[in-house]
Image (cartoon, rainbow, N blue to C red; front, top):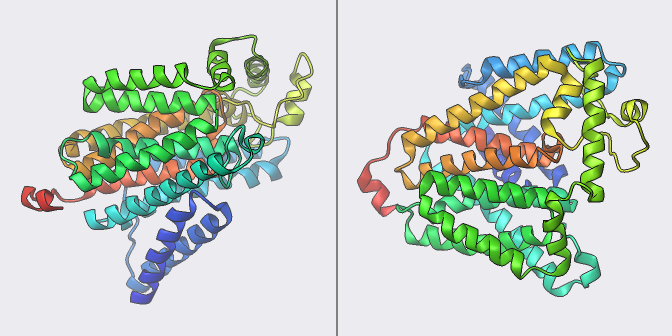
Length: 392
């Protein structure tokens, strides 16, 4: 039993570390975690899955997925894509297994340490690779996914820097880690990730210390003023409705709304939308990739109103629950920073989802569920004596 638990803990650390460098290793370690967890429950004759505020809402999402699959034109593909449901088990694993602050520190240290290392590798690529090879920086993944992963790491780290109770060594380490993460995120030149990071940082400032808004705005202004022309053009294009990428998204969204009106209740199924888009589009759009570059609209089209209501209720409950956890532990420098980071990631994820199908990107969704699980975990821990916190 002890051996199985050690294997499970080792798989968990490998899973966390691989989030930033290998989806294959990440998937294999996730599977090993699940197998060990089930084996432990069988050996201990104990059901160790904790109840959460999300249980019935996850069930509603499952029902919506399979209703959409039953009525889909391509039920086989819809059934295959619905495997994304399994990733929600990550929430339950971390909520149940991370029971002490010490273990939570190992989890966050492993995840953010690896993210920082990847950020350093990104800076190295910028310094030593040919400029033509890093016009938009990708590190182990496509630049879009890289930008989202770096955005999440940055938003998880920032609360440790701004919490007044963070020990000096933790604050210094977190502040230093922000540099390579911020530089690498900047080098992805991904507008959605820029907006998501800015929204998450603004949320942290409003929640933790409103005076942080001044330096935050100053940094944003300086980044824009001293950015290379290509980056300035990308930033300026955010509000340009005639920019080719923006025009493409508008075409995608208008066609998506048209598809939804024909399949409003249970949607078309959790499928690739390329063929259906071509069928309903008013004009040819060679840039579409099988999804609609918008999370709410993608859910409406694929799962209909049933799935949209279920997932909207799930997301709203996550926001409320994470806020309650944060207000309860905000004075604890570690638990409060983890809880605030999870909330900021939630904000950033949904801002990114306004222009990308973030909910369909496995690497990104895995990190979202990790933060949801960790918020539950730190909320379930007993309060730690002040004397212990002072020397931690």
